[in-house]
Each structure stands twice: as structure tokens, then as C-alpha cells.
Amino acid sequence: MNWLNHIGVGKKIAMGFGLTTAVMLLMMCVVNWRIDANNTLNARVIDLRQPTVIASTRLLNGVNQSLAGLRGYMILGKDSFKAERADGWREINDAVADLDRYAQGWTNADNVERLARIKQSLTAFAQAQREIEDISQTPDNTPATRILVTQAAPLAKVMIAEITTMIDIEAAQPATAERKALLGMMADVRGSTGMALANIRAFLLTGDDAFRHDYNTFWTRNEQRFADLSRKRGLLTGAQRDAFDKFSQARDAFKGLPPQMFEIRSGEAWNLANLWLGTKAAPEAAKIKGWLGEMVEDQRGLANTDSTAARQSMDNLKVALFALGALALGLAVAIAWGITRMITRPLAQMLAALEEIADGDGDLTRRLDERRADEIGAVAVAFNRFTDKIRGVVVQVSAAASAIGHGTQEMATGNADLSQRTEEQASALEETASSMEQMTANVRQSADNAAKANQMAVGARSQAEHGGRVVADA
Image (cartoon, rainbow, N blue to C red; front, side, top):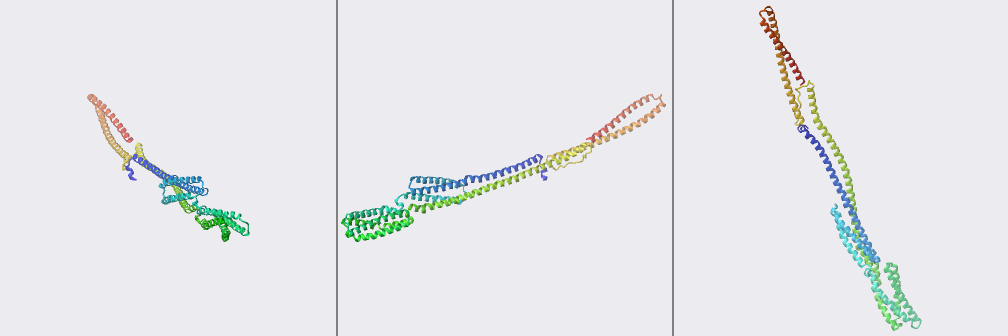
């Protein structure tokens, strides 16, 4: 840490505040970074994951609605169900458009692939629905019924009409046992034909094998009675034979149709709309629903993952803020303590040295550490120069005081000698007073001079002592 002694106090303080500020900026950066990360996760959940789930649900609802409308039209044939199916497809198309937009931000490539497969399957699904709707409520939808309506029923109508004609003619014939038996044959043929036709219709409506069994029973009877009637053809009148021939032709054309109708009605293709619904539309719908379910499940899982990551990020942010706060506090305390110590310790040393000098017993040879290159070091250099100068002044003053004291002593010695000589001269003059008046005047003058010299010596000693105290005080 000696390198800090070469940095100014102002720079030290600036560095301290700078480091503290840097830590604060670091905290701000960390906070902003984590907040941005959280915002990204939250935006992904709010603006991507949940909307994807909602759009997928809308698509699923549209698929179900279109199927419901199609089934309603297949059963009832009302145009309102067509409108319902169209509404379902509008929902489907809007949902697909939303999913296409959301797919730009999906993080799972499998979902993008699922959406591509869903769109492809929707095309086949729409085509199947159109085909089903077009064939529903038409004779082509039920081939067996179409055979009944277009072939079997017209032939049966001819058969019933011709056998009825024969019966009406027979009713006008003379009543004989043979003719009555012939009439019974005709009646049985007509009755068994009608009952066979009724059971055909019932079987085509319900598919119940009991009706097919009853048809076989009635048709077997019809064949027996028709054979009996054929053997009695010679008893028929000309008009009856014409009617019988027409009946026979119609019957020959009719009798091969029921097995066809029974076979078709017993098979899967008896109702093409239902068949196509089960083999075309429903499988495509099932695939779409499966892919949508996988997509929704994945998006929900990703949403939970993002939410968990967001919560974890917030927890990490709290820990980071606590750690950075503790670091900032510790750094601030360390910087404050270090800077204070680097400033106050040398200042205290200077103060102690100055107080010693001010008390008069200071050591003027004491020197402060000049190795610092900051303001404290500059003050130490100035202090050392000051004490050097004071010590020089004290030495000079001491030398001057010593010189003055020595001169004063010499003057005092000279005055003492002069006084002694004066006394000797005075004694001599007393003896020679008369002759030495002029000498007396001179001696007086000398005495006066000696007095002045003595005063000067006393003043010089006083000045010397005063000068010594001044130096000591300095």
C-alpha cells in the first residue's frame, strides 16, 4: 500500500468515492441485467406462452365447432348447421394466423414442426368436411337407399300394381274352389311382396338383422306362392296373364336388389357421410387435436419453466444485491478508515512536534517522514525546513548572546581597574590637592565617563538576558 503515499489526498478521497460509486454502478448494472432477464422471461410467458395456449385452445374449439356443425347438418340437413361449421372455420383460420405469428418467437423447434403438420392436416380436414357436407342429405349418401328409391321401389310399385290388377280381375270371376285358391295365391303374393318391401325399408333405416330375417321369411313365402301361381297360369284370363307377365318381369328385376341393399347396409359404406366422417374428417381432427395437445402441454411446461426461472432470477438478484451491498458497505468502511488513517496519523505526529516546540522543550532536531509524495509529505518537508531554520536562528542568537556577555564582562573589568586607579589618583591628589586641581577636574570627568560605561554594561547584560529568553521561547 506504499504506492498510496505517492497519491494526493484529494485523489485518495476521489478514489474512495470513485470505488464506492463503481460498486454502486455495478449494483445498478446487475439489477438492470437481472430485471431485463426477468422482463424477457415474463414477456415470454405473457406475450408468447399463454397466447399460444389460448390460440391453440381456440383452434381446438374451432375444430370441434366445425365437426358439430357438420354432424348436425348430416342428421337434420338444416342450413343453420352449415353456418355453424363456417363460424368454426373462421375461428380456426384466425387461430392459425395467431399461431403463425407466435411461432416466430417459439424456442422449441418441435412446436414449429407441429404447427406445419397441423396446417397440412387442416387442409385435408377441410376437404373432407366439404365432401361430407356435399354428399349429406343426398341419395348418393346412402347407396342402399338410393337403390331402394331409384330401382327397388319403382319395381315394387309395378309389382304391387300388377298383382292388384290380377286380384281385381279375379274378384269378378265366378267363385269356384279352384278360383278361390287362385285368388288366395295372388293375395299371398301381394301380401308377402308388401311385407318384404316393408322389412327392406326397416332394415335400411335401422340395420337391425331382425328385419332382414323377416324379409327372408316373407320373400321365401313369396317365392313359394309365386311358384304356385305360375303353375296355375293356365287358369288366368288374358288380362291377368298380361298383368302376370309384367309382374314377373318386375319381380325378376327386383329380386336381385334386396341382397345388394342388405350387403351395402351391412357394410361400412352404407352411409358415405358417416363413413367419410369416420375415415377422413375424424382421423384428421384426431391428429390435429393430438398435435395441439402436445403443443399446449409443451407451452405450459415452458411457461412453468420460465416462471420458475423468473422466480429464481429474482432470488438470485436479492442475493446479488445483498452481496454487493455488503461489499459496498465494507469497501466504504475500509476506504474511509484507510484514508482517515493515512491523513490523521501524520497530522497527529506534526501536531505533537509543534506542541513540543510551542512548550519550549521541543527537540528542534526532530524530523518528519518526507517519503510521502502527497500533501502530507509536502507539509512534512515544510515542517522540517521550518525547524531547520528555527534551529539556525537559535544557534545564531546563542552565539550573539555569548559574544555580548563576553564583551560586557571585559567592560566591567576595565571599569573596576579604572575605579581603582581613580581612587589611587584621588589619594595622591589629596596630598597634592593644591597642585592638582586641574587633575581633579579631569578625574571627575573620568568618573562621569566610568559611570556612563557602567550603565552601558548593565544595559548590555540586561539585553543579553532578554535575548536569551526570546530564543528559548522561540
